[in-house]
Length: 311
Ligand SMILES: [Mn+2]
Image: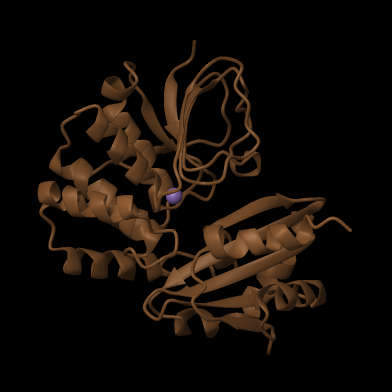
């Protein structure tokens, strides 16, 4: 048997990367076996900042699962998982998304809850099992909750996330206001990212009926840093649509502070679909979406509903 690793989705975000690390810190106590963390691609600037702040090593990047057994975190969507995951090497699932198309050939621990972050699910497991949480692990979980729920403002936020954040900070004792401000600045940072890659940093593919849909998201406190690069971003969207053979591609810029979204529209088919689904008019290849900040809760479901509608 190969080694056991914890791994999240490709284009790893903070919750995905840090949850893999959290699993490795507590695996022995949760599962009874040791786990090494991995990431399915380069980590983002927010995660880099948090790891250096908390003095934690960056997990090794993986490109393909070979003989490893996998504790999968933060996704169950086959299109978002590295190649090589099978019903044999899937060891466990901890997630907070809709159940994707995975299968397991043997009984596994699978825990999926409709909460704001995978770290919230991990926290609940630790609490139920009376596992002691150290300061650094508490800070890691706090960072995941803040990142995924945009500091509890996203509609994905649940009562469990609020409770977890409060209880965890009794351990971590962070100056939360300061911590969040620095974390969001790191999240918004474009340092080291080529303009053409911005749309792919937090990007996911979805099968919606017979359509393949790609949705990129960029969460920022500074929307101007994105809108000033619009023409290059539109070109990147078109290139990605062709390269990945997509039927539709969207790019949602989330204004973290004002809690609104701006959806970039790549072409006519996207325009027709988005106007219908969101009930708003596109202007200059974008649609202003008041109060829309969550791909998972506010973008995917209406698109899925429309694209899987029976004729
Ligand atoms: Mn997540």
